[in-house]
Length: 142
Image 1 (cartoon, one colour):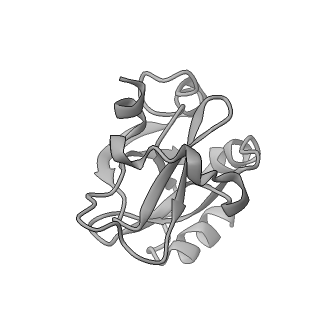
Image 2: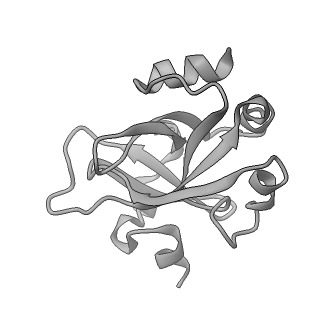
């Protein structure tokens, strides 16, 4: 049922067997928390970019946080993300590990599709720690 609600929330057809989840930080392939997806049967579905309205901020950890703004970043290509497929039966357990200032919400990709994704609550984003110009978490780490 949680998966059906997630699909409806994102405006996607219901897929009772999987949840698509956009990642931008420590859960990416090769990053320190990727094992949390892999051990739950997650698999990389495809690479993508967010819609240009998203900004990336450096949070404690360090880790990134995405926020959506009202207006698109002028000429901005969006933030690079990985979209992972997670078995529906594993989603609730994974979602329970997400702690503020991060949250899971519908996230718009550059092609207009909406999937659940990691975002940062508005109160967790410090404008002085914006790292959008790097285009991705890996770009920032480089």
